[in-house]
Length: 313
Image (tube, rainbow, N blue to C red; front, side, top):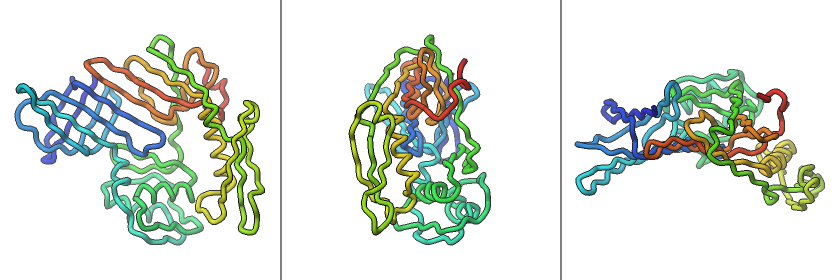
């Protein structure tokens, strides 16, 4: 059974086990998860601070409440809340403009993240060659993301208790989904996602002479060319251009699975769907509990860089 624990500004907690509606949304392109929930309540409703959602031993969501609404009609009061996960704190706070020479993550953590309530970090605490430039208008999430892109080469992972992990040790889970739990499956091929050539300008005196090609686009007779100037652009090199091609290639083939019950899944997890030859990487996950019915909707793109035999069930 799903359990929702609400915490008030005053530190008290209240537990709900039967919301009218609960939706939790995770997306690869959004740093923080989102939640919307609706309950029938009685009596006065204190101002709320945070929400946790538990299913058996799993924590499906933990975060601070952005919006609290109370609607009363015909003597019945409905409480509606919207919340985001802990990453939203970094998104909502602007970083002080400055430049770090030979930065270490320990220094960045102490000067940017601990003051926002983050408790600890997991990282190689060495000083890196180069500089980290924080420009006016950058969020603290941009600081974390830029540090990882420029120096550690990893993706940040933040636990619900405020530990920032940039060690790169958080590997994706491997999830097998059987036909028996699929309510529906939608398969899609998107030729419009493909780019056949990115003509790249790599140095100031040169032209757009480097042609980065997509073999998938060529094999599917797609001709769609772009021009990209990467001279002087921070964090953009030839490898980044190749990654652009790869992302477009992966987006060509995708599936959407609507499953009964709860599938504990995060964007980036590897999906093996019964009846599909390809492996897929989850890009979006939506958990819903509406009128007592639980479903999980997983959107996933084809995943090409693995040994498929490893995932055979």
